[in-house]
Length: 470
Image (cartoon, rainbow, N blue to C red):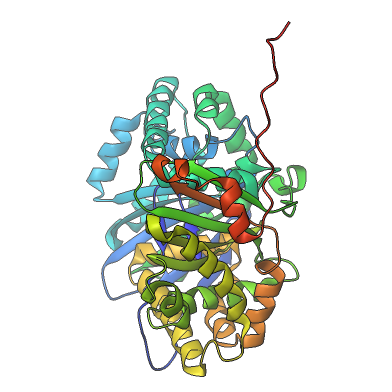
Protein backbone atom coordinates (compact mmCIF):
# COMPACT_ATOMS: atom_id res chain seq x y z
CA UNK A 1 0.00 0.00 0.00
CA UNK A 2 1.80 3.06 -1.22
CA UNK A 3 0.76 6.43 0.26
CA UNK A 4 1.93 9.56 -1.52
CA UNK A 5 1.74 12.95 0.15
CA UNK A 6 2.97 16.34 -0.92
CA UNK A 7 4.76 16.86 2.38
CA UNK A 8 6.21 13.37 2.72
CA UNK A 9 6.44 9.85 1.33
CA UNK A 10 5.11 7.30 3.79
CA UNK A 11 5.99 3.66 3.12
CA UNK A 12 4.53 0.98 5.38
CA UNK A 13 7.28 -0.84 7.29
CA UNK A 14 7.81 -4.53 6.59
CA UNK A 15 9.10 -6.15 9.77
CA UNK A 16 8.93 -9.88 10.47
CA UNK A 17 6.19 -10.91 12.90
CA UNK A 18 5.07 -14.34 14.03
CA UNK A 19 2.02 -15.10 16.12
CA UNK A 20 -1.54 -13.88 16.47
CA UNK A 21 -2.95 -11.22 14.17
CA UNK A 22 -3.30 -7.64 15.32
CA UNK A 23 -6.40 -6.82 17.34
CA UNK A 24 -8.62 -4.33 15.48
CA UNK A 25 -8.63 -0.89 17.06
CA UNK A 26 -12.13 -0.09 18.36
CA UNK A 27 -13.63 3.05 16.88
CA UNK A 28 -16.68 4.99 18.03
CA UNK A 29 -18.74 6.68 15.29
CA UNK A 30 -21.14 9.60 15.27
CA UNK A 31 -22.66 11.85 12.60
CA UNK A 32 -23.46 15.43 13.54
CA UNK A 33 -26.74 17.03 12.35
CA UNK A 34 -24.78 18.96 9.69
CA UNK A 35 -23.39 15.72 8.21
CA UNK A 36 -19.92 15.88 9.78
CA UNK A 37 -18.73 12.33 10.51
CA UNK A 38 -16.90 12.00 13.82
CA UNK A 39 -14.69 9.06 14.75
CA UNK A 40 -13.05 8.60 18.15
CA UNK A 41 -10.35 6.11 19.12
CA UNK A 42 -9.75 6.11 22.86
CA UNK A 43 -6.14 5.52 23.95
CA UNK A 44 -5.62 6.13 27.66
CA UNK A 45 -1.96 5.11 27.95
CA UNK A 46 -0.65 8.67 27.59
CA UNK A 47 -2.30 12.05 28.28
CA UNK A 48 -2.17 13.08 24.61
CA UNK A 49 -4.91 13.90 22.10
CA UNK A 50 -4.78 14.37 18.35
CA UNK A 51 -7.62 16.24 16.66
CA UNK A 52 -7.57 15.77 12.89
CA UNK A 53 -9.88 16.72 10.06
CA UNK A 54 -9.75 15.01 6.69
CA UNK A 55 -11.41 16.52 3.62
CA UNK A 56 -12.20 14.48 0.52
CA UNK A 57 -10.29 16.76 -1.81
CA UNK A 58 -6.88 16.99 -3.45
CA UNK A 59 -5.43 16.47 -6.90
CA UNK A 60 -8.43 14.36 -7.95
CA UNK A 61 -10.58 17.52 -8.01
CA UNK A 62 -8.16 19.65 -10.06
CA UNK A 63 -8.27 20.51 -13.71
CA UNK A 64 -5.40 22.36 -15.36
CA UNK A 65 -6.45 25.76 -13.98
CA UNK A 66 -6.73 24.55 -10.40
CA UNK A 67 -3.76 22.14 -10.34
CA UNK A 68 -1.85 22.81 -7.13
CA UNK A 69 -4.55 24.89 -5.46
CA UNK A 70 -5.54 22.15 -2.98
CA UNK A 71 -1.92 22.23 -1.83
CA UNK A 72 -1.97 26.03 -1.66
CA UNK A 73 -5.22 25.91 0.32
CA UNK A 74 -3.57 23.52 2.78
CA UNK A 75 -0.94 26.17 3.49
CA UNK A 76 -3.59 28.86 3.94
CA UNK A 77 -5.32 26.73 6.58
CA UNK A 78 -2.60 27.77 9.06
CA UNK A 79 -3.26 31.50 8.62
CA UNK A 80 -5.81 33.99 9.90
CA UNK A 81 -9.45 33.15 10.52
CA UNK A 82 -12.46 34.68 12.28
CA UNK A 83 -10.97 33.92 15.72
CA UNK A 84 -7.28 34.51 14.96
CA UNK A 85 -6.83 37.67 12.86
CA UNK A 86 -3.49 36.72 11.30
CA UNK A 87 -0.77 34.08 11.25
CA UNK A 88 1.08 35.64 14.19
CA UNK A 89 -1.99 35.33 16.41
CA UNK A 90 -2.64 31.83 15.04
CA UNK A 91 0.87 30.64 15.93
CA UNK A 92 0.78 32.35 19.31
CA UNK A 93 -2.40 30.48 20.22
CA UNK A 94 -0.89 27.17 19.11
CA UNK A 95 2.19 27.81 21.25
CA UNK A 96 -0.02 28.62 24.24
CA UNK A 97 -1.73 25.26 23.83
CA UNK A 98 1.56 23.41 23.26
CA UNK A 99 0.24 21.99 19.99
CA UNK A 100 2.23 20.14 17.39
CA UNK A 101 0.62 20.58 14.00
CA UNK A 102 0.83 19.86 10.30
CA UNK A 103 -1.17 19.09 7.18
CA UNK A 104 -0.70 17.12 3.98
CA UNK A 105 -2.18 17.08 0.51
CA UNK A 106 -2.46 13.96 -1.60
CA UNK A 107 -4.56 12.83 -4.55
CA UNK A 108 -7.71 12.02 -2.57
CA UNK A 109 -7.34 13.68 0.83
CA UNK A 110 -6.22 16.87 2.51
CA UNK A 111 -5.76 16.51 6.27
CA UNK A 112 -4.94 18.85 9.16
CA UNK A 113 -3.99 17.81 12.68
CA UNK A 114 -3.11 19.17 16.10
CA UNK A 115 -1.65 17.17 18.99
CA UNK A 116 -1.38 18.31 22.60
CA UNK A 117 -2.30 17.15 26.10
CA UNK A 118 -5.83 15.98 26.84
CA UNK A 119 -6.57 18.89 29.19
CA UNK A 120 -6.73 21.12 26.10
CA UNK A 121 -9.27 19.02 24.17
CA UNK A 122 -11.98 21.70 24.16
CA UNK A 123 -9.46 24.33 23.03
CA UNK A 124 -8.21 22.00 20.27
CA UNK A 125 -11.71 21.36 19.01
CA UNK A 126 -12.50 25.07 18.97
CA UNK A 127 -9.21 25.94 17.27
CA UNK A 128 -9.83 23.33 14.56
CA UNK A 129 -13.38 24.57 14.00
CA UNK A 130 -12.26 28.17 13.53
CA UNK A 131 -9.55 27.16 11.08
CA UNK A 132 -11.71 24.83 8.99
CA UNK A 133 -14.89 26.89 8.92
CA UNK A 134 -13.83 30.57 8.93
CA UNK A 135 -10.57 31.18 6.99
CA UNK A 136 -9.91 34.80 6.01
CA UNK A 137 -7.60 34.27 2.99
CA UNK A 138 -5.79 37.54 3.64
CA UNK A 139 -4.16 38.69 0.40
CA UNK A 140 -0.77 39.44 1.98
CA UNK A 141 -0.61 36.08 3.72
CA UNK A 142 -1.70 34.46 0.46
CA UNK A 143 1.18 36.02 -1.47
CA UNK A 144 3.69 34.94 1.18
CA UNK A 145 2.39 31.39 1.10
CA UNK A 146 2.47 31.27 -2.68
CA UNK A 147 6.25 31.74 -2.40
CA UNK A 148 6.46 28.87 0.10
CA UNK A 149 4.53 26.53 -2.20
CA UNK A 150 6.61 27.41 -5.27
CA UNK A 151 9.65 26.78 -3.06
CA UNK A 152 8.37 23.23 -2.52
CA UNK A 153 8.07 22.86 -6.27
CA UNK A 154 11.68 24.10 -6.60
CA UNK A 155 12.88 21.46 -4.12
CA UNK A 156 11.06 18.68 -5.89
CA UNK A 157 12.38 19.79 -9.27
CA UNK A 158 15.93 19.61 -7.89
CA UNK A 159 15.50 15.83 -7.50
CA UNK A 160 16.08 13.66 -10.59
CA UNK A 161 13.58 11.09 -9.31
CA UNK A 162 10.81 13.70 -9.27
CA UNK A 163 11.21 14.39 -12.99
CA UNK A 164 11.06 10.67 -13.79
CA UNK A 165 7.97 10.11 -11.61
CA UNK A 166 6.22 13.16 -13.05
CA UNK A 167 6.89 12.14 -16.65
CA UNK A 168 5.60 8.62 -16.02
CA UNK A 169 2.42 9.88 -14.36
CA UNK A 170 1.73 12.20 -17.30
CA UNK A 171 1.64 9.15 -19.55
CA UNK A 172 -0.09 6.61 -17.28
CA UNK A 173 -2.91 9.05 -16.52
CA UNK A 174 -2.73 10.57 -19.95
CA UNK A 175 -6.24 12.04 -20.17
CA UNK A 176 -6.40 13.69 -16.72
CA UNK A 177 -2.80 13.98 -15.49
CA UNK A 178 -3.45 16.92 -13.16
CA UNK A 179 -5.79 14.75 -11.10
CA UNK A 180 -2.80 12.66 -10.02
CA UNK A 181 -0.43 15.59 -9.35
CA UNK A 182 -0.95 16.90 -5.81
CA UNK A 183 2.14 19.12 -5.91
CA UNK A 184 0.70 21.05 -8.82
CA UNK A 185 1.95 23.15 -11.67
CA UNK A 186 4.01 26.23 -11.00
CA UNK A 187 2.00 28.26 -13.51
CA UNK A 188 -1.29 27.32 -11.84
CA UNK A 189 0.01 28.18 -8.38
CA UNK A 190 1.33 31.53 -9.62
CA UNK A 191 -2.02 32.32 -11.25
CA UNK A 192 -4.15 31.28 -8.25
CA UNK A 193 -6.27 33.88 -6.45
CA UNK A 194 -7.98 34.20 -3.10
CA UNK A 195 -11.29 33.94 -4.95
CA UNK A 196 -10.21 30.47 -6.07
CA UNK A 197 -9.54 29.59 -2.43
CA UNK A 198 -13.07 30.64 -1.56
CA UNK A 199 -14.42 28.52 -4.40
CA UNK A 200 -12.58 25.49 -3.01
CA UNK A 201 -13.87 26.27 0.48
CA UNK A 202 -17.48 26.61 -0.66
CA UNK A 203 -17.34 23.50 -2.84
CA UNK A 204 -15.33 21.00 -0.77
CA UNK A 205 -14.74 22.34 2.74
CA UNK A 206 -18.19 21.46 3.97
CA UNK A 207 -19.01 19.19 6.92
CA UNK A 208 -20.70 16.49 4.85
CA UNK A 209 -17.44 16.12 2.86
CA UNK A 210 -15.20 15.86 5.91
CA UNK A 211 -14.34 13.61 8.83
CA UNK A 212 -13.32 14.73 12.32
CA UNK A 213 -11.07 12.20 14.05
CA UNK A 214 -10.06 12.41 17.70
CA UNK A 215 -7.58 9.89 19.09
CA UNK A 216 -6.03 9.60 22.53
CA UNK A 217 -6.94 10.20 26.16
CA UNK A 218 -10.59 11.19 25.65
CA UNK A 219 -14.10 9.84 26.12
CA UNK A 220 -16.02 9.31 22.90
CA UNK A 221 -19.33 10.56 24.27
CA UNK A 222 -17.69 13.81 25.43
CA UNK A 223 -16.22 14.36 21.95
CA UNK A 224 -19.57 13.74 20.25
CA UNK A 225 -21.32 16.29 22.46
CA UNK A 226 -18.57 18.85 21.78
CA UNK A 227 -18.71 18.23 18.03
CA UNK A 228 -22.49 18.67 17.85
CA UNK A 229 -22.30 21.93 19.77
CA UNK A 230 -19.04 23.47 18.45
CA UNK A 231 -19.46 22.62 14.77
CA UNK A 232 -23.18 23.40 14.49
CA UNK A 233 -22.43 26.65 12.67
CA UNK A 234 -20.47 24.90 9.92
CA UNK A 235 -23.18 24.67 7.30
CA UNK A 236 -23.97 21.54 5.33
CA UNK A 237 -23.89 21.88 1.53
CA UNK A 238 -24.63 19.92 -1.61
CA UNK A 239 -22.55 16.78 -2.15
CA UNK A 240 -19.70 18.24 -4.28
CA UNK A 241 -19.21 15.05 -6.25
CA UNK A 242 -22.75 15.02 -7.58
CA UNK A 243 -22.23 18.38 -9.26
CA UNK A 244 -18.49 17.93 -9.88
CA UNK A 245 -17.94 14.19 -10.40
CA UNK A 246 -14.41 12.80 -10.55
CA UNK A 247 -13.72 11.61 -14.11
CA UNK A 248 -12.63 8.02 -14.57
CA UNK A 249 -9.09 7.56 -15.84
CA UNK A 250 -9.19 5.56 -19.07
CA UNK A 251 -6.89 2.58 -19.65
CA UNK A 252 -3.56 2.97 -21.36
CA UNK A 253 -3.90 2.82 -25.12
CA UNK A 254 -0.48 1.28 -25.71
CA UNK A 255 2.81 0.60 -23.97
CA UNK A 256 5.36 3.41 -24.01
CA UNK A 257 9.03 3.86 -23.17
CA UNK A 258 10.54 7.08 -21.80
CA UNK A 259 14.21 7.79 -21.17
CA UNK A 260 15.51 10.85 -19.33
CA UNK A 261 19.08 12.08 -19.05
CA UNK A 262 19.70 12.92 -15.38
CA UNK A 263 22.81 13.45 -13.22
CA UNK A 264 22.82 9.86 -11.92
CA UNK A 265 25.36 7.06 -12.11
CA UNK A 266 23.11 3.99 -12.04
CA UNK A 267 20.23 3.20 -14.35
CA UNK A 268 16.86 3.64 -12.58
CA UNK A 269 13.51 2.58 -14.02
CA UNK A 270 9.87 2.07 -13.16
CA UNK A 271 7.30 0.11 -15.15
CA UNK A 272 3.93 1.64 -14.18
CA UNK A 273 0.42 0.44 -14.94
CA UNK A 274 -3.20 1.30 -14.18
CA UNK A 275 -4.17 -0.68 -11.08
CA UNK A 276 -7.29 -1.77 -9.19
CA UNK A 277 -9.37 0.62 -7.10
CA UNK A 278 -10.94 0.20 -3.68
CA UNK A 279 -14.42 0.63 -5.14
CA UNK A 280 -15.89 -1.39 -7.97
CA UNK A 281 -15.66 -4.98 -9.13
CA UNK A 282 -11.99 -5.66 -8.37
CA UNK A 283 -11.61 -4.66 -4.72
CA UNK A 284 -10.16 -8.07 -3.83
CA UNK A 285 -7.26 -7.40 -6.18
CA UNK A 286 -6.15 -4.53 -3.94
CA UNK A 287 -5.45 -6.96 -1.08
CA UNK A 288 -3.60 -9.31 -3.44
CA UNK A 289 -1.52 -6.36 -4.68
CA UNK A 290 -0.51 -5.39 -1.14
CA UNK A 291 0.39 -8.97 -0.23
CA UNK A 292 2.43 -9.38 -3.41
CA UNK A 293 4.29 -6.17 -2.61
CA UNK A 294 5.24 -7.59 0.80
CA UNK A 295 6.18 -10.96 -0.68
CA UNK A 296 8.63 -9.65 -3.28
CA UNK A 297 10.16 -7.11 -0.87
CA UNK A 298 11.28 -9.89 1.50
CA UNK A 299 15.06 -10.15 1.20
CA UNK A 300 14.77 -13.94 1.27
CA UNK A 301 12.20 -14.18 -1.52
CA UNK A 302 12.88 -15.86 -4.83
CA UNK A 303 12.22 -12.49 -6.49
CA UNK A 304 15.07 -10.85 -4.58
CA UNK A 305 17.37 -13.84 -5.00
CA UNK A 306 16.82 -13.98 -8.76
CA UNK A 307 17.11 -10.25 -9.41
CA UNK A 308 19.27 -8.76 -6.64
CA UNK A 309 21.27 -11.49 -4.90
CA UNK A 310 22.27 -12.76 -8.35
CA UNK A 311 23.97 -9.41 -8.95
CA UNK A 312 22.01 -8.63 -12.10
CA UNK A 313 20.11 -5.69 -10.50
CA UNK A 314 21.05 -3.37 -7.65
CA UNK A 315 17.45 -3.36 -6.38
CA UNK A 316 14.00 -4.44 -7.51
CA UNK A 317 10.49 -4.25 -6.08
CA UNK A 318 6.80 -4.01 -6.78
CA UNK A 319 4.34 -1.49 -5.30
CA UNK A 320 0.64 -0.71 -5.34
CA UNK A 321 -0.90 2.72 -4.65
CA UNK A 322 -4.25 2.35 -2.88
CA UNK A 323 -6.88 4.69 -4.35
CA UNK A 324 -10.62 4.98 -4.82
CA UNK A 325 -10.26 6.76 -8.13
CA UNK A 326 -7.91 4.48 -10.08
CA UNK A 327 -5.04 2.77 -8.30
CA UNK A 328 -1.58 2.33 -9.73
CA UNK A 329 0.93 -0.53 -9.88
CA UNK A 330 4.65 -0.19 -10.44
CA UNK A 331 7.76 -2.33 -10.73
CA UNK A 332 10.87 -0.37 -9.75
CA UNK A 333 14.41 -1.52 -10.46
CA UNK A 334 17.97 -0.18 -10.53
CA UNK A 335 21.08 -1.46 -12.28
CA UNK A 336 24.75 -0.64 -12.59
CA UNK A 337 25.53 0.91 -16.00
CA UNK A 338 27.23 -2.21 -17.32
CA UNK A 339 24.29 -4.45 -16.34
CA UNK A 340 21.37 -2.38 -17.55
CA UNK A 341 20.30 -4.69 -20.37
CA UNK A 342 20.67 -7.77 -18.21
CA UNK A 343 18.62 -6.25 -15.38
CA UNK A 344 15.80 -5.08 -17.66
CA UNK A 345 15.61 -8.47 -19.37
CA UNK A 346 15.69 -10.30 -16.04
CA UNK A 347 12.82 -8.22 -14.60
CA UNK A 348 10.68 -8.81 -17.69
CA UNK A 349 11.39 -12.54 -17.50
CA UNK A 350 10.69 -12.74 -13.75
CA UNK A 351 7.21 -11.21 -13.72
CA UNK A 352 5.37 -14.16 -15.35
CA UNK A 353 7.08 -16.53 -12.90
CA UNK A 354 5.19 -14.87 -10.02
CA UNK A 355 2.10 -16.87 -11.07
CA UNK A 356 3.79 -20.26 -10.62
CA UNK A 357 2.26 -22.41 -7.89
CA UNK A 358 5.66 -23.02 -6.28
CA UNK A 359 7.02 -19.45 -6.50
CA UNK A 360 5.87 -18.61 -2.95
CA UNK A 361 5.57 -21.08 -0.09
CA UNK A 362 2.69 -21.20 2.37
CA UNK A 363 5.06 -19.90 5.03
CA UNK A 364 6.01 -16.93 2.86
CA UNK A 365 2.34 -16.05 2.36
CA UNK A 366 1.73 -16.17 6.13
CA UNK A 367 4.87 -14.20 6.94
CA UNK A 368 4.06 -11.48 4.40
CA UNK A 369 0.60 -11.03 5.90
CA UNK A 370 2.15 -10.79 9.38
CA UNK A 371 4.63 -8.17 8.21
CA UNK A 372 1.79 -6.06 6.83
CA UNK A 373 -0.06 -6.31 10.14
CA UNK A 374 3.03 -5.29 12.10
CA UNK A 375 3.65 -2.36 9.79
CA UNK A 376 0.07 -1.15 10.17
CA UNK A 377 0.21 -1.51 13.95
CA UNK A 378 3.50 0.39 14.14
CA UNK A 379 2.14 3.22 11.99
CA UNK A 380 -0.77 3.58 14.45
CA UNK A 381 1.19 3.47 17.72
CA UNK A 382 0.93 7.23 18.29
CA UNK A 383 -2.28 9.24 18.51
CA UNK A 384 -1.20 11.16 15.40
CA UNK A 385 -0.36 8.06 13.40
CA UNK A 386 -3.69 6.52 14.29
CA UNK A 387 -5.62 9.64 13.26
CA UNK A 388 -3.74 9.87 9.93
CA UNK A 389 -4.50 6.21 9.18
CA UNK A 390 -8.21 6.71 9.86
CA UNK A 391 -8.60 9.78 7.64
CA UNK A 392 -6.47 8.13 4.96
CA UNK A 393 -8.64 5.02 4.93
CA UNK A 394 -11.82 7.10 4.94
CA UNK A 395 -10.63 9.06 1.90
CA UNK A 396 -9.01 6.38 -0.29
CA UNK A 397 -11.05 3.31 0.62
CA UNK A 398 -13.55 3.31 3.49
CA UNK A 399 -13.55 2.67 7.22
CA UNK A 400 -15.19 -0.71 6.59
CA UNK A 401 -12.44 -1.59 4.11
CA UNK A 402 -9.84 -0.68 6.72
CA UNK A 403 -11.56 -2.58 9.55
CA UNK A 404 -11.57 -5.82 7.58
CA UNK A 405 -8.19 -5.30 5.92
CA UNK A 406 -6.02 -7.78 7.85
CA UNK A 407 -8.52 -10.62 7.42
CA UNK A 408 -8.76 -9.94 3.70
CA UNK A 409 -4.98 -9.94 3.29
CA UNK A 410 -4.64 -13.20 5.21
CA UNK A 411 -7.27 -14.73 2.92
CA UNK A 412 -5.35 -13.97 -0.30
CA UNK A 413 -4.37 -17.15 -2.15
CA UNK A 414 -1.94 -17.93 -4.93
CA UNK A 415 -4.92 -17.91 -7.28
CA UNK A 416 -5.78 -14.41 -6.04
CA UNK A 417 -2.24 -13.21 -6.75
CA UNK A 418 -2.33 -14.81 -10.21
CA UNK A 419 -5.67 -13.13 -10.89
CA UNK A 420 -4.27 -9.75 -9.91
CA UNK A 421 -1.25 -10.27 -12.17
CA UNK A 422 -3.42 -11.36 -15.10
CA UNK A 423 -5.84 -8.46 -14.78
CA UNK A 424 -3.40 -5.65 -14.04
CA UNK A 425 0.23 -6.50 -14.87
CA UNK A 426 0.95 -9.27 -17.37
CA UNK A 427 0.15 -8.53 -21.01
CA UNK A 428 -1.24 -5.11 -20.08
CA UNK A 429 -0.06 -1.80 -21.54
CA UNK A 430 2.52 -0.08 -19.36
CA UNK A 431 4.76 2.96 -19.24
CA UNK A 432 8.44 2.16 -18.73
CA UNK A 433 10.19 5.28 -17.53
CA UNK A 434 13.95 5.31 -17.02
CA UNK A 435 16.69 7.74 -16.12
CA UNK A 436 20.37 7.34 -16.84
CA UNK A 437 23.44 9.46 -17.36
CA UNK A 438 23.84 11.30 -20.64
CA UNK A 439 26.98 9.24 -21.19
CA UNK A 440 24.99 6.01 -21.01
CA UNK A 441 22.31 7.36 -23.35
CA UNK A 442 24.94 8.50 -25.85
CA UNK A 443 26.36 4.98 -25.74
CA UNK A 444 23.07 3.54 -26.99
CA UNK A 445 20.60 3.44 -24.11
CA UNK A 446 17.81 4.96 -26.16
CA UNK A 447 14.06 4.55 -25.98
CA UNK A 448 14.24 2.35 -29.06
CA UNK A 449 16.84 0.10 -27.42
CA UNK A 450 14.85 -0.27 -24.19
CA UNK A 451 11.78 -0.95 -26.26
CA UNK A 452 13.43 -3.98 -27.82
CA UNK A 453 14.24 -5.34 -24.35
CA UNK A 454 10.64 -5.07 -23.11
CA UNK A 455 8.84 -5.91 -26.36
CA UNK A 456 7.62 -2.42 -27.23
CA UNK A 457 7.97 -0.85 -30.66
CA UNK A 458 9.05 2.73 -30.17
CA UNK A 459 8.30 5.02 -33.12
CA UNK A 460 11.29 6.99 -34.38
CA UNK A 461 11.42 10.64 -33.38
CA UNK A 462 9.61 12.97 -35.75
CA UNK A 463 11.88 14.73 -38.20
CA UNK A 464 11.96 18.51 -38.09
CA UNK A 465 10.26 20.13 -41.06
CA UNK A 466 12.56 21.69 -43.59
CA UNK A 467 12.52 25.43 -43.99
CA UNK A 468 11.10 28.09 -41.71
CA UNK A 469 7.58 29.21 -41.13
CA UNK A 470 6.19 31.62 -43.68
